[in-house]
Length: 66
Image 1 (tube, rainbow, N blue to C red):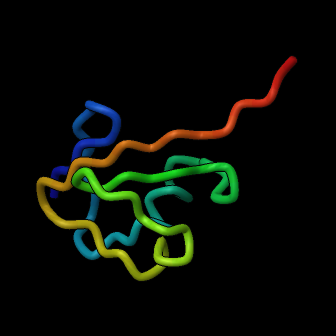
Image 2: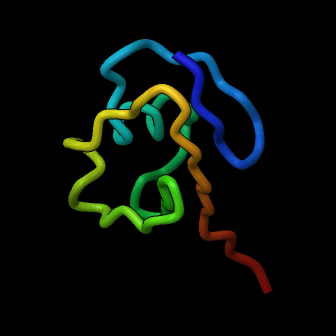
């Protein structure tokens, strides 16, 4: 199925959860915030949120530095 992550189309398997997507993208979950279809997803819900065809995600990560 097709989803959009930060304005880039990704082909992903059906029934993929948000937690699995974050893992597949090699992101560190405690340092990630996700908006799905214009709504912020609480981190505690990542494992239970199944992505759907056409979902639009904005994923931001914490970047440290000085």
